[in-house]
Image 1: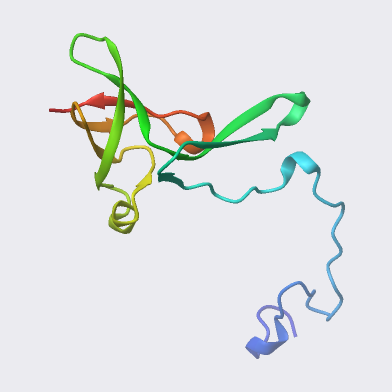
Image 2: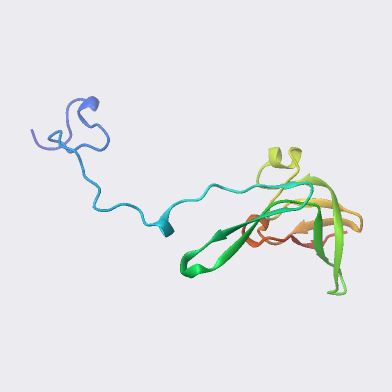
Length: 130
């Protein structure tokens, strides 16, 4: 019978219509593997290093309590983070004090918005919004 099969159970995943298996052409290379998501928490600063393609090193931030703030005069200030006020992408991340791009944080200089991806870059950059 051509076209769609009659029953749903005949279309098993990873199988051809004849019942034969699809074989993988090759395995994933080390560079192509998916790494687990790193959520940066508020706390004592912790970093880890990962070897990238070509021998480059990526510094991943695991937890932090300081931020590089840019104020209205375009000057950089180092400040401490008190609390995560809100996270537009997911409200549950704010409750757990997780620092991601776009999160609104409370610092000792006022409220600020995180402008970089801390898990990818190894530091936290933010802009004052108050």
